[in-house]
Image (cartoon, rainbow, N blue to C red; front, top):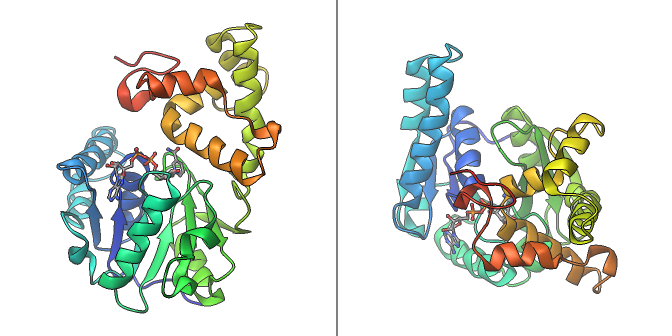
Length: 288
Ligand code: NAD
């Protein structure tokens, strides 16, 4: 199955950390991109965050100003679902909540052409369950990017029970055409990476709760002795504690509350306090 032609418009819903990054990746590959967010001004802010990031590369002489201008002109912030009607691929990157994503997907079916591929960037929610309320769940597939999407190569292409082979193959080929390294996974909770990564976060949080060490020491050890690019506290500050906690809770509940995946009260406290990490200026570390 062939990748989508670059003349096919792509829509991204949710202009937060992931949605903005995915919009950049698709625009970089040459697609016209519609970017939508329910929060007023968020889509334009997402577009501006892409400009800011790319401007640094222009300043360092890595890309031409004209390339930045061309890329950014391909991204159009829009306000309503009807504005996405011409997209051949819609990627949702909204809040990690099964019912909210389901409701968006059923609304999209009313707006989009029958052959438009609907993709979800969910980190952990069953693609099968997300498609269960759709009229045609065969067109739904997981297209799971990693943070930051423009830099991270891996994309998990996640097949739900109803996902058609043709849809999964097209998204796989499209991710490869966008310069990514796609892998195929079936829709088990957390798929591959978020399943394997749970103990990394959980054990680090347990060590903190048991006061064995502090966050800065643990992160430094993981980087300097463990060879990791980031320690668990730096990484969860980057991911966002709301997102990371929701993903752990989703994996925990999907595995019948297996205590191996027990969510952390330390992290819940951060979420309750609104200390979501870099995006709010404070998490385990301060970014002000
Ligand atoms: P985020 O909080 O930065 O952004 C989410 C955006 O979606 C917000 O701007 C919000 O206003 C918008 N939104 C919420 N509900 C909406 C709706 N119904 N319609 C339109 N817009 C809506 O979150 P994020 O970190 O970008 O995560 C988004 C998705 O990507 C989640 O499913 C998450 O699990 C997944 N994901 C996150 C990461 C990560 O490291 N943060 C990595 C991979 C996948």
